[in-house]
Length: 330
Ligand code: SAM
Ligand code: SF4
Image (cartoon, rainbow, N blue to C red; front, side, top):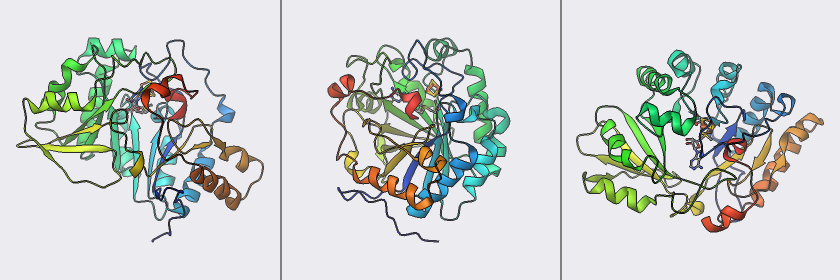
């Protein structure tokens, strides 16, 4: 089934990828994501229900979205994640249903999620050392995440994406360890530039720019560029003789706004056209006040139309009013 894409903004960008946050709860406390004082959890009644999530999914797919990524908070912390995945996975026209997760509860669930229609999986892991994991995530869950990774590979998620937020002085000494970890596994290690959000300890000194990470790897390996989809945010490389691959997500030093094809919906049902633009409109309130699908579509089209050409430079992001990463949904 081919749907005419109606999600084209005034800069000519065609949006086909929705990042849908389904919770702001999480069982980790990663310093770069969650402020040390925590966040005020959104009351459960204000979070989208499974029916609302599926209705929104269906509306977005009807407007041209072909890929949905479930995120959060920790998406697997929702008890109804199975039925959400199954119902979204069955939407005609949706080609990819993916999830970004901290992986803690994947050891038992990876196979079931795959059978229910999830066909893309990203697991976040910033260190290969248990002690350091506890320092970064403030919880002793390293072994659970590693078990989750093995279970996901066994369930056939390939390539399995691994997100690594690189922070200078925290985990930059593990970049080469992560690369060699991909030697015999079908994993795509994605080095992500550290981004500033309220109270997340970000500083320009803590950011390790993509060029520096890449130069470090190139001193040891020959990286062969992979030609990917023009809208992909990662710069992708393979390494000779390696089962896995390496990518860089360069939001800070080489932003990819010109090719952006993403829209976001927060766990409380607000559409956000850019991670770094504070404007939000409530699709949830529209649905709960009896709005029709056409009414919801009008709000979506309004947000797409108002999308900025590019996000501000990183120095400005620091002083800008925005929600935290965990509240927006990464
Ligand atoms: N809890 C899930 C997880 O950790 O994968 C999904 C939500 S998390 C907000 C989504 C992604 O955002 C993770 O890969 C995380 O590493 C990334 N992230 C969070 N804060 C970030 C920051 N300040 N800079 C760069 N990436 C960040
Ligand atoms: Fe939780 Fe993911 Fe944020 Fe870590 S990055 S605190 S696992 S939402």
